[in-house]
Image (cartoon, rainbow, N blue to C red; front, top):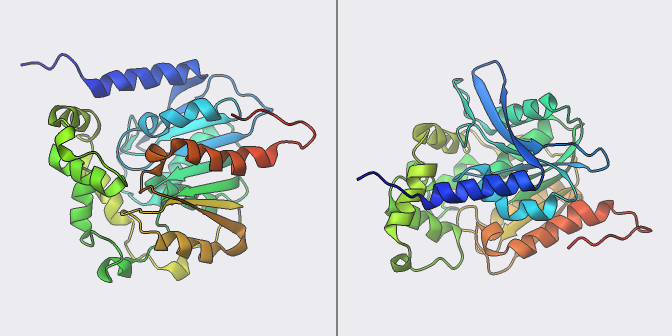
Length: 312
């Protein structure tokens, strides 16, 4: 029987409509090297607003991961929201799978849009990409927010038991789920208080997998395999930008120890916020608190004291 309704595709349509109403348009950029990047960009740039780049993590496309936050941020920023390579409508025929390559692709999109200065927020895998972008393009990046991204992890951490899932192939199968059971397992790792499995209809989970997780399966798993490869903390550059680190207290994907490790690595240039009673997906579990911290770091610090503005 042909499936006549998809909850996931319907929500996709709702997000597209909402992004358009908030002044964004869908843009595809051919980088002319076998890579095509999709990005949501402003319909009309406002030179009085700063530019903000939102970089998503693994899982769904960029709309799903940033949709609830865009309406709060759009009045204050020119927003740029790319789909990373192998997500949404972005892809490449090139063999590179590193976060450094992802960062280069994103920056080429920004350059194609004549963006010379920006701040960025990187969520989970997007935090790896954002950190790399900040390190590679120091003059362009002004402020950095790293959310639950274990950029300070080392390859040896997998062997030494820092992670709940220490087998990289097992982690890749969970993080790029192909069955409803795997998706339930992923939700158990990412949420502090996940719904009981019996309350999660398999039909909805399978619908999500069909719409979001069936393309570029091995390529996405290669992105995961590339993260710890030859990773050594002493070789991680110290980014110079003011940096906010936000982490869920009960993160089971990248343990809280990695947040403190990153804070030590960056020193006084960084501040760390721990979101209580939240897991890896604190952006889903505590969206208001997430926005509060972003507002304080990205918006309030830029407001002239003589011209207060309602930021709610």
